[in-house]
Amino acid sequence: MSTGLPTGLPADLPADVPHPFSASADGAVGRLLSSASAGVVDGGLWRRQYRRRMLIVDAVAIIGAVLLAHVGRFELLAEDGPQADSASAKAAVLSVLLVAAWFIALDVVQSRDISLVGVGSEEYRRVVSATAWVFGLVAVCSLIAQTQFSRGYLVIALPVGLVGLIGGRHLLRRNLGKRRARGEFMTRVVVLGMPDSISVLCDYLSRSTPAGYQVVGVCIPEFEGAPGQFLTVPGGSLPVLGDQHSVEIALRLTNADALAVTAVEQLGQDNMKKLAWQLDSLDIDMIVVPGMADVAGPRLKLRPIDNLPLFHIARPRYDGPSSLGKRMFDLVFAILALVAIIPIMIVVAVAIKLDSPGPVIFRQERVGQHGKRFRILKFRTMVVGAESVQDKERAATQTGDEIFFKSAADSRITRVGRFLRATSIDELPQLFNVVGGSMSIVGPRPLAPGEGESVVHFVQRRALVKPGMTGLWQVCGRSDVSEAERIRLDHSYVDNWSSVQDLIIIFRTIRTVLKREGAY
Image (cartoon, rainbow, N blue to C red; front, side):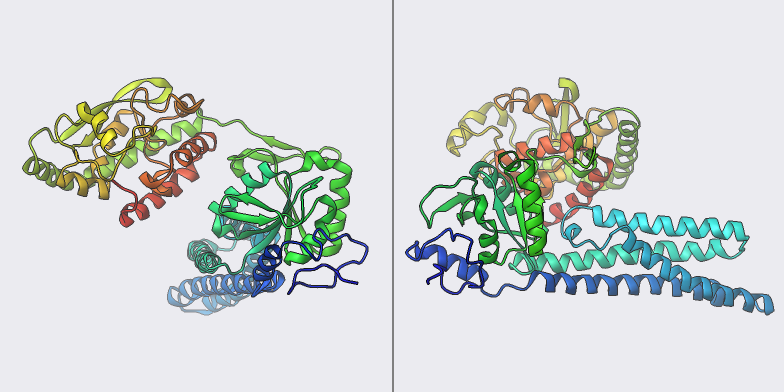
């Protein structure tokens, strides 16, 4: 009896499971699934390979740091005598124990969890946490045992080992990111949910290629459409492989590694439990997608009540010690930066004067925190009176309907101005705004009065934080980012602000400015 399977797909399927496609189904689906299955690397195989690489990198970093600390403290800086020999012998034993404890601690905190690889900072946070616990324990034990050499030893081993571990993990991530950009080492996912929620999930996954998720098919609860249909999602089309009862057949057809469920409410608790049991028997991971987006990890807390998992989403905090710390960082950073770049600013001022008549500094009213108006400072990059002909320029560049007006073909930009914009040097005077308190180093870019008011909640949410010299949308494409994406990124920053995120944005800004992409 014919199984009705598309050509080239596995035929070892349960006989009692109804297939979502008949033998006469549209051949396009079969060809798509067959091509998607071709050349697929076994998910378990690449995970084992990557984990082995992590183990090797961790071993090299830890052993190298401990060996360097031992040689540096007890060989190069050691004093001659029997006491020195005795201390070196004891240190050798402690070094072996430290290596073992450090290596085990990294495993205990699950820093080698493959699901953390490729996106976010959680992997690095766990490496730092494991290292802190180990060295804290060693320091306490050394204090109790009154070991005299521990401090110098730890001063060498701790920073060297931590830098080695984080640097090694970063290199592994970069290599994995390049492989995933070529479609390798991906986690193949079938999504079970309604079309709208599937489309949202695919949109987010398509923007996060380093995370390594590739959607290969979908199942729609109570699906009653004709066989061979496709669902259009951001980035392409996906074959509809049936309804909630076709999950197992869909997973086998696509050689999937995981099932992402966005239809929790439609399935109900009992069916979700049965589905989890079914996936466990198939050795398939389950990913449950909540109905809320753009919430960073630090705001999420899982608090089970009688084994019922509840997600608590903390409210964003814009005041208190964190706000004070941000202000102190802004002041120190801005003052040091101004001292360092004074010669550059003088040269830029002379170039502007020689290039076109008018003032060196451009001042414009912008909307700041809590809706307060302030005057932003920038090096002038346009001809004098550019604001008076902005409507004419919008019409000439056919951007009259856009919320945020910025065009690479803007005729008002001067020759020197194009260079200043491409290198972001025109933004340097805003350091004075930062020192004065109207702006921050990192935050949403300040809007002109009236700009963005047509977008619901946009202006109001942005006003909760100070505008910044750089922000999320600047490091995600700058002016090439679509308006919808810029709005989403600004909301995401406001809702998930943290000092760690600010530091990451600053480092990413340096790389973005050097590339000169999307700056005009």
